[in-house]
Image 1 (cartoon, helix red, strand yellow):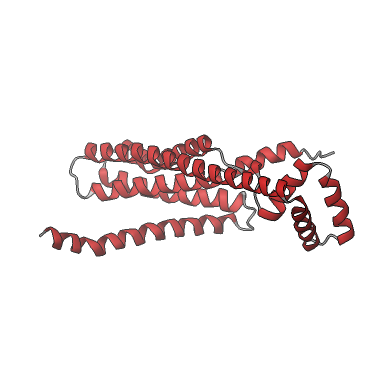
Image 2 (cartoon, one colour):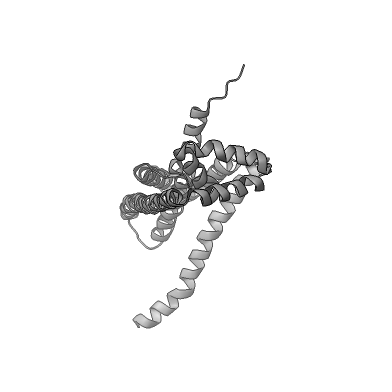
Length: 243
């Protein structure tokens, strides 16, 4: 007989909340490194120079992305904690207003006013329960949804590093610059498709994970192509200003 275990489900949801950092890190690592390899392969004669530049880009990117995720989540967490504290103080000063607003919120969700009144009355006997319910129902805030800056930073940095190694390893292992670049770009495309297939298809419960994989690949490559075209458009401007 299957057992419902809320604590295990909660931990699973917390792990899934890091999907954004993983997907973003892998996608950026793959595209950034593939772009460095493609750009330098035609401009630099030495294969070792291309590899060193890609390694430097990978290290800098992983550190930058990890630090950015850490600082972003830390700032978001501090702002939300401050808002939660303000909500708690407001609730303590005006409990009756909170009760009325909570009663109206429960009515919008289909609970009769009489039943809602009984619920609010029970919650009022435990101020912490009343305030935590008000935080979620009225303001969409919850202390349990606050991010973990250290975890987000580590995941983002590690995901970027993993993504960067996908196109880089074939280039390092294959002696020919041309075939190494082709293999690296092919592996990058496969990795992007796999990310979409797993995260947007399988884990998201989409009916066709394959479609999700191709959609993710198309969006990622489309963004990279637009960036490349913008670079081509502005390069004459830079050359003219330099001249």
